Length: 461
Image (cartoon, rainbow, N blue to C red):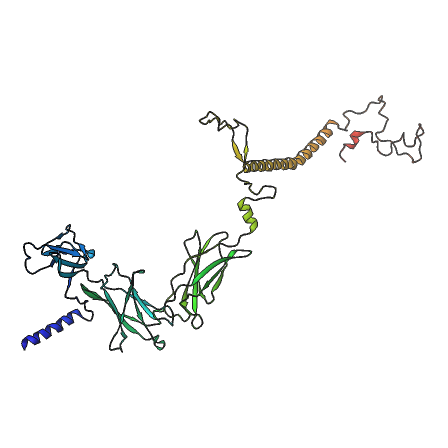
């Protein structure tokens, strides 16, 4: 009686110790081992006959003796994950015993996160283990209503090798989007089990749309600083009943900082401050229109360049005028100068001079000619400006010298015997009708002024 009670109490204590997340049960023919341990697999409990031969096979292949000791009992040293499999013991060529070896480690505690792609989708809880789980690993998700729920429901989780993630699914009725749920994850295998921390979630709190798709960046005609951006809703979100708000960020290719534009309701935008001629990187993300949940991830980068004037492009590519051929490179064209102009005397291996001529780009001559023309014009302007000043100065000096050289003041009183003493300097005025001795009117009398006396004209008045 006491023995039965002790056995029952022992079972209860074991169940309590394992908790709600028990390890995976082992079958009778299974042997569990951890990585790096030594394992002994028995074949017979009695010694075979002297003429009997014991041999071992693993998955129908002979066991290598490199890290195993063959005999009635097979000793495997420092086992690894790839040592797992079914081992068979043969005596005299006949199968006697078979055991399955499992080399496992207890699973790592899961760190999961939950999200919902739209209001009409289920909640997905995912995590990615650090090492690939073994085939016998089992993962379940426990869900119950927070504070009011009594019994938790169990949802089986699946492992997807392509993305190397465990995924669990929770179905939420439409009327319970704001209901809080208490969730946790149990992971177990033959070597042990582990439970995650509890999380409190709701369908609206974990709402996270997928990134927008089909992001296109196009130039705006005749606008060198504008870009037009277009995008579409993700396939998992139906815009007929629920809409998204969007955020756009962009930057020039050589810039490290983004410019962000928020609260966009439409699926298009015109950027007005793009850098002229620069490639731009643009990304878009979305949020539920009432602010439920969190922003989606940024979309993939889309690239675009603002519109450029074809004339500017023509100058940049070197097609400057119709007088040059289409393959004419203005800046790359060179002129061949006479040999020895710059004293180049290098020769190649064949003795032929490779430095006997110099090539100078055309723009060098253009710059030199423009400089000479500008200097000549400046010098001509200076000469013309100061020539007038020099001319006015020379005239003033000539007048002063004329007055000094021809004074009109007499140096001594006239002599009575001088023939000019009685002649006045100015003749008396004559009548208009007077006639000279030669018969020509006005030829003898010169009027009120004697213009033949040039000194009179130079006397200051």
